[in-house]
Image (cartoon, rainbow, N blue to C red; front, top):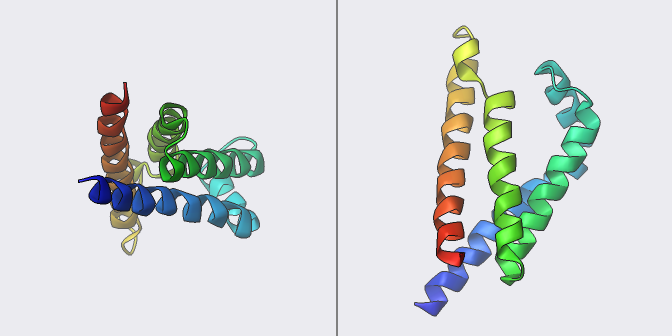
Length: 122
């Protein structure tokens, strides 16, 4: 079972590391997207959330300080879901509403998974 746990940590940690890196690699376009959603201090928000994902992903990947990393990721996912993917506010516009709903439910499911891992770590 240890190998399954390790593979899971690599996949989950890698997912957040990749997405955190993406925040920096695509800072301008993600800042524009955040501005379009009304996020105050959008550039700083993109940088902060990128750091949250990199730190959280690294803690999952390494197994070090996982409680801190998991907490960062849970906060990131819940706040981002409601701020950036509020699909219920979007009139159906060529699939945009569906896309935001998918992102919202994915983030909430990831947050739930991280809560399960957090509970096992406490």
